[in-house]
Length: 268
Image (cartoon, rainbow, N blue to C red):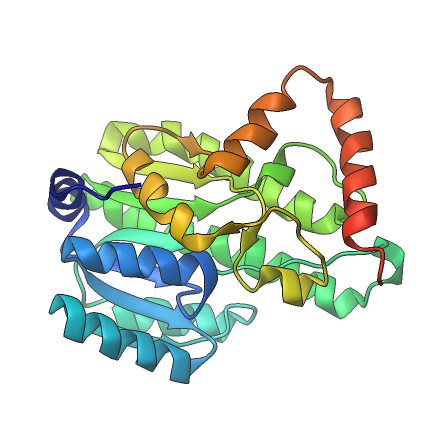
């Protein structure tokens, strides 16, 4: 999808001068950081892997002439969240992209509970804390934007990926509510619910994703939806999977997801 100059200008003027992106070292977070750099926004890039962040920071600075800040932080821990907030406090941030997250798969009772707890902290607690912090700032500013990463599996149960789907249901529900609460203050909230994406997620979650989209297919659709919708299903596959399943009741979607997920995790 073409990222027009008109769209780039809209994003920069409405959400500038700085944007903060979590999970910026890879996947959807990295893709959105690259597209935001195109608009001319200065970027705060955060993730656990400092070397990858520095590499991205250097590349974006050279190509687009923007300023960047790199913050190495593990948001599974409170000190990581505190570090991001403290080190970005002096910057005029108008857009926050909460893209950090990961998944687990297989039978829930067989998984290491420590992994499930860490996923809950990253996907839900850290996202909540940062949404709370920046929505308060945006309310005072009377403007800004939040982008939250949900998933198409966040709309119903997903056997063999049960807890991951539950974390994304939390994100989707929170974002839908915040979109209405913050609208009177000029703050836009966008839930992003993609289908399977080649983002590195599949390796950590130990799933074999078929028909996965490339991250380059979804960055522009996400940013074009910001300020216009409260939820976007970016990319053709996301739309196809979402809209084709709308004729089925929720229980049927869960059973169909069970069949798909069992195949995707069959080597575990």
